Amino acid sequence: MLGDLNREEALSVQQPTRPTAFDVDLLIVGGGINGTGIARDAVGRGLSVLLVEKDDLASHTSSASTKLIHGGLRYLEYREFRLVREALIERERLWRMAPHIIWPLEFVLPQSNSPRPAWLVRLGLFLYDHLGGRERLPATRTVALDRDPVGRGLKPGNPKAFVYSDCWVEDSRLVVLNARDAADRGATILTHTRLVDARRDASGVWRATIADAAGQREVRARALVNAAGPWVADVLGSVPDARRDRGVRLVKGSHIVVPRLYDGPHAFLLQNPDRRVVFAIPYEQHYTLVGTTDEAWQGEPGRAVIDQQETDYLLGTIARYFERPVTQEEIVWRYSGIRPLYDDHAANASAVTRDYVLDLDTGTDGAPMLSVFGGKITTYRKLAEHALQKLSRFFPAVGPAWTADAPLPGGDIADADFERYLTTLQGRYPALPAPLLRRLARAYGTRTERLLGDARTTADLGADLGGGLFTREVDYLSANEWASSAEDILFRRSKLGLHVPADTAARVDAYLAQRLSGSARGD
Image (cartoon, rainbow, N blue to C red; front, side, top):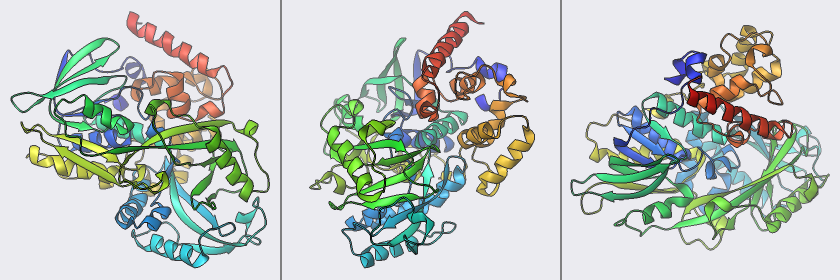
């Protein structure tokens, strides 16, 4: 395993030696949260797994979320009780599995500008508190915004508000950690590798062609998992006899990041007159993340960008609730993602179900293909369990479900107490800056010590490429987390892109190119 190597060995390790062909139990297409979650679950049950992703891990939908582990309070309005219950149960489970990248977050729900009566909101929150077996998160409480500190920064209005709890997640890191754990258990993870075509042969086995920059290879697989997210229909199109009676509905969600709107560690759930809701969430110390929108999308999934109407909608929400409005020029970052929702023929995009559908197609020769429609980050682990349940009849020797209590890499923190672990880490590395240690611990958890190794001062961490990103961390990400570009590192493995100098991206790319060139020469 890469994590067990010393630093010098790890730096020389990239992907396994490139074979000309693979023979596996599962070929998984898609390196988002569902694909990596299924890969992790499957390999832990004894199946051989190959996952291919045409871009970087979490490079699309799974890194463009609102970054919440939550039950989905507004889904109660659409009577999605099963989905909400499953998600609520998963909240605290995922928190225990990865307390370095998942932690509790309080949400303030003001009743000013609310299109819903307070009694109805309170009823929904009562259900929210009791549907999912809440254990550690606090129950809902009622506050007066004109007297409670959580009201600071809001415009005057109806002072009544409710405060409830969900969890925050570093979404793209959750994907990478699932991939890392899958690889540690024996799965092969290939990024920048696309599925060209797939077909069932006469023996009831999949024969697929995959391609990367070096050319094409053949894969033989007993089952094919289509977890391509917004490209799920495209994958079906590459399979000649695939059943296509399930529909996917593409919905664009956009977010903006603005200078911090208010003090305090809490978030806001803001209700708009059209009954849609928008979150305002503390983000990266100095900012507030505002989103999301829900817009039908007809274009290419990978080309989604926020449009002016969405920008105006989010800025209008800020102006409706906060004392200080924000101008378009103050937006420091914006991102959009396409949610591949199961098409339930809802009249508007906001009402489309966030539940998932797993479609099993055995064709005429018995080689199964499982296609994943819909889903949300919070329920990815249960989705993976259900996927393996559907596939288990094709693999009689497959092991039992196991992921419910298994920590993700770096998540083996005693009692999920991140602050206590951080104190221990600071004691082991007293000469390293406290802010650096906190950032690293939040990203890597207990694997921070693998990254730091015998470092005693920042001089031992290599060159600073900008904003406290040292070459040792870049080496670790390249060797252990499939990072191959500045964008991978600055915006998916971290959000350092919001903090580093303007020339850091170029310096990271130059360093990675130099490192790759040295590996090719055998340096």
